[in-house]
Amino acid sequence: MLISELYHKNVVTIIESATVLEALKVLIAERVNGLVVLDQEKKVVGVLALQDIAAATIPRQFRHNIQMAAAMYRPGFFSENCDEIKKLPVSKIMRRKFTITNLNDNIMTVSADFLKNDLYLVPVIEEGKLLGVITRSEIKMALAYGMKIPKYYHEMKKSSNKQK
Image (cartoon, rainbow, N blue to C red; front, side, top):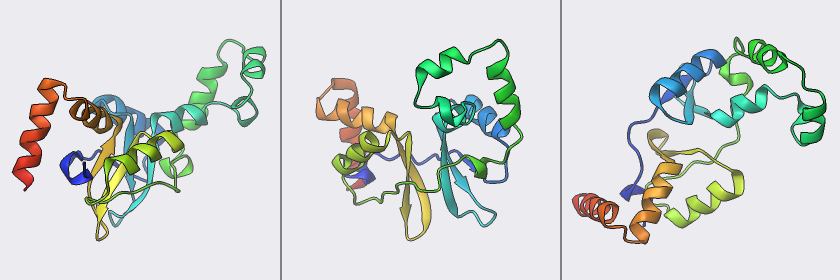
């Protein structure tokens, strides 16, 4: 199955100078877990996932030491950390090293990358132009198609026939 058969064309983006608070509001309003980050010229410069915002609230020394995080907990600590990062520009916490895909890549390659790098979204880019994204939802739909779950199998089959 090719990316062209299942990518999501409605991409939720945010400008790199937007604040983390603004990004979180977009994630909530759009009901997504990741955003494609653009510069002033509308060029893709990064991705920002909910997990990146959550990670920014946790001091580095706690990220790989759950026991230390538990021991250092005190009331208000999480809220204080959230308050510290909410005015930061997205560019401070976004992923600058990110995976991209194109319409001719296959779902196996992208799925492997999702697993290896714990991804939430992969921009679909052709000739420098952002066309869409692959998210965990598209991976889920590809699995449903591959396992021939009737409703999804027929929807994807219709979709792939339209593109031929």
